Length: 591
Ligand code: AMP
Image (tube, rainbow, N blue to C red):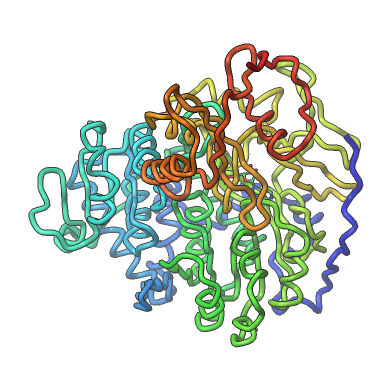
């Protein structure tokens, strides 16, 4: 289907707009001269040629040099406590944690999960895990027990770092079902916690602050990030130490980090953005990284931008739309003159938001695109490039992106014509590309066809090479920037004794992108009622957590199914939104 390019005015960039000269000033030239070998040369590598390790590049190489005393991480507590960590502090603390893991017998490739919310210990645990060649597997604190169980179990997690409160609320009842989870480390002060339960604080205090990172193959596994699918439970995308090349390169060319920058990424490390850009990328560049423990609050956010003198800010469309909805008063109270660049990711950024940024914050917002599987930004509106509001931008140097259409089971064709919709595809081989789904080789292979990695997103490319997001090719839901798999929600609902069947869709929402909505058919003997609806929502929230549970439930006698008995979510959605039903030849006759 051919589409017209949106008529929003391009935001022209001229060199007078830049307070500092961008690291990438000529996109075409940089693309032409680009090589990953040259990027690799800008990193250190472990001493004596012993490989490439994320924690060495992010922390030790700065701590061993002139940046030792530089502020690496400033943590802002919910109750206004501020904790500062220099590169020297991060080195020592992560060394201690690495020794704790070694003392517990954690070996190369074994998984260490963190479920704490944004506490300083999360950052220290991630860095310490990379030092020991363990695998960092973060968990979002707003998950309920079931999503936590799925991830700990599928990830064969050996060590969990958590708080006593989260443990009692979400983990304690899962323990018997997780025989591979050997150690639980509490970040709080706990005495005699019990078998397999430890005080991380105490162990850290007793451990040595010295640690030598073992030789690290760039292909050694570093992180496991779970992402949702449409047909099954979440899958663990495997990432390796070599991904650090992308984290460094995008920090340089997209975040445009310069020595004195103060960076704030609002994403939670429970999601890939919060790890790649909330931990790794700023530290690689030896700058100051702000971490806020609290959730979104407009006044707080403006205050942070102002008081912390944030110069580069990475946030998400849902948050921007929330700010847009507010009165301009809190904005007027704050000085944002230190801000130099604003970036957004995770869901479509509407053109109005880009313009709002320019008019209200004094800077347009740069949209960029990537996903858990890509490990880092792939397509972006670069700081020095004209912005087309509503577009995701152009591919990174070293990244080949295309719009393809499937012509046979194992064959795709690149769509040469411009402004035509198709699936967004990337040429495999970039350093941060996922290396597999844990224990699911077949699913991994199915992501690649005919020499392309197929992203599952529909998009189009305009005459100047800018990519425009169209939608997902599958049923995956994006709510508040978080990916939710309908299958996971349906399975959760089905555990309620009144539910016979459930079909879950993402229903468009002006603020949070999509809301999770469920259609439920009841077992004989149960009647639809508001009370039962409330009970089901409460049940799902308890089990799945607020990040995953449906916000809306509709009762329906029978759910539409195809001839193989699968619920047709596409049809549920079309009917709910009053859209054409499309091809219903596979629909089983509805009774
Ligand atoms: P995740 O793996 O959770 O990071 O989600 C990745 C998905 O989020 C992509 O495949 C897209 O569907 C969506 N996404 C990410 N960035 C953008 C963007 N800039 N515009 C539109 N959709 C986006």
